View 1: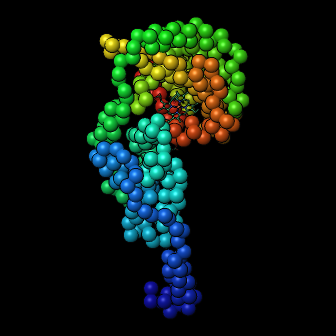
View 2: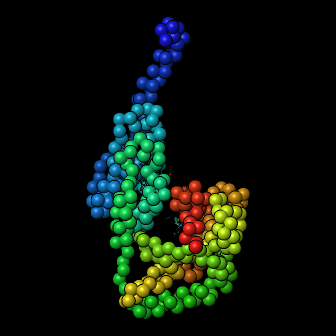
View 3: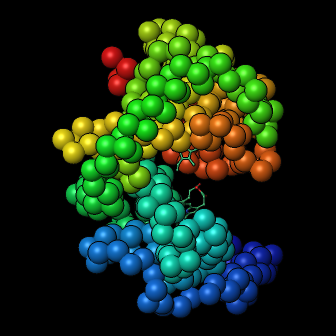
Length: 317
Ligand code: HEC
Ligand code: HEC
């Protein structure tokens, strides 16, 4: 060691390194930091959870630790905060339309449950940010209170039933449907596929059925589902839920049908899946242009170790 320090080249290099280290402490991208009162107007317990786990990157109340502020770590942190705020900024909660807020909370719950948020690299050095399972149920409980369970009157139910029957009988014949902006054609045959799962969505009271084509069903029985083989197609159809005075749930207004078509090559740029969605009874293709798929991919991202598919084979049995 002593020898090293006597070496002039070593001393100069060391000096340069220290100099650069000190110098970069002064070049820091600016992060707007402010505290605001119009953030997340939830119940206080819930806000506490988001505050400790998410606010550093998803609000203007970023509270960095001293070790986050040292360069070059700070560059990375600042980048995460900037992108994080672009996706979701709790300080601007009021600017998110009321109807969308529930969906954002639901997506946040998904991201937490599948372990993608808070970011792993962040959670490692900020262990206090981990969301515990009791906190997860707290969020679930809150979301379930947002569903309005008022019984609908019988005319609503009758018209919903009529529409459902209509869907069963006629939608398959609707060949005039325009293709999705990414070129994918509507697949009317999905209604004859096997229903492999159904779910209720907590936040907005919808009822969903997920259908799989023959290749999907065969892949399940062969336990060959990660990755799913080329040719697999899922369809997810959603209806609003209506509840009659006895508390029975009926399928209401047809909301949409979405597809995921597996072709690892053809759809390489979208995780190997072709995404498409048609909305309403009139089956209008969703998306202004083909970039609509970034929205699909963003939400399916937490399932990347499951070939981006949420539906688990366990629920198939
Ligand atoms: C260390 C910074 C950081 C923390 C902490 C963090 N996030 Fe994120 N979050 C990001 C970044 C960066 C993105 C942008 C997408 C990506 O890189 O995955 C993001 C994206 C998101 C998205 C949008 C996902 C999408 O692709 O549409 C949601 C929802 C989200 N975060 C929720 C949360 C929740 C809820 C928490 C707390 C439990 C949290 N995040 C904590 C950095 C963070
Ligand atoms: C807000 C988050 C979110 C967005 C955005 C989203 N999905 Fe999904 N998707 C889910 C969830 C969660 C499931 C699991 C089933 C359920 O709970 O309804 C799912 C399931 C599916 C399924 C059934 C296969 C599976 O993964 O279980 C298809 C098909 C599908 N989505 C297509 C799409 C398409 C096409 C888009 C974009 C137009 C899209 N999704 C956008 C959250 C999302």
